[in-house]
Image 1 (tube, rainbow, N blue to C red):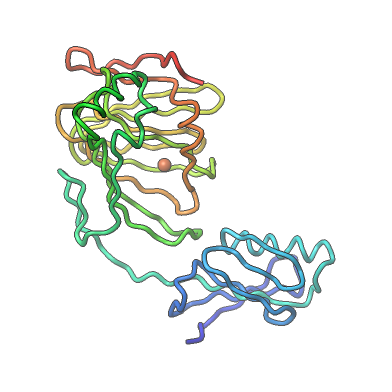
Image 2: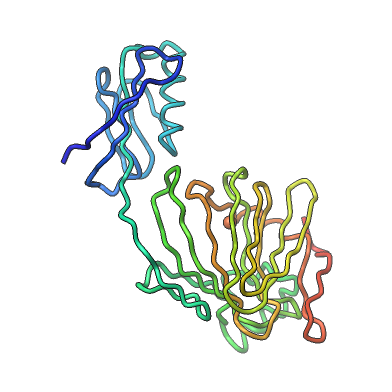
Length: 279
Ligand SMILES: [Fe+2]
């Protein structure tokens, strides 16, 4: 099936034309397609890689990046200025998901993954206690994520629920692994559904913040802030997250350095303390 397209000129770039699909039956589930119409043969790969035969490789993460990369080729004199580009984005059908506020479960059931103690034992300050729990009690469930996965494409908005079980490891509250966004300039919104939690945030240049969350709390994670959620209550803490698809996840930095702050449970109440092992 051929896409129906609309065309527009690229501002200030005579000879450029961008055709944007208005309807498309995705044949490959590809994130987007881009084609030089007049000049070059091209091969489309899954995900976001485009190979322009004879002109080298372009690795594109979005339609915008494709245009920018093609533009650089043109400005460098590597290709003619008299070609057009056709950019086709997968048309997603609208859908609705029912969310259980207590469990975070989605209906219909979508992607689910779990994080157990063995997945993150080294992230707790008291690693000896984590090892003792693993050897004795076993590999306890720390948190579970129900997710709506979408193409990693500019404009798509994935969302998920996270349920963190109550409990502590050496007095430190159960938590998520935490991450920066791979694209640091991308933010996120969290919305509390049930239970009681805390959102830990920090920036690479020394800022730190902690926000308490309950059912009904809408927390904003601004660009450049790493974020980790913690269950500070006696029940499951469940929240909903919404972000831009291209934000990506950088877990590695947190796995290496940890967070500046720890959330301990003392006499049933949370206490935010400095992490002596940070960095
Ligand atoms: Fe995030």
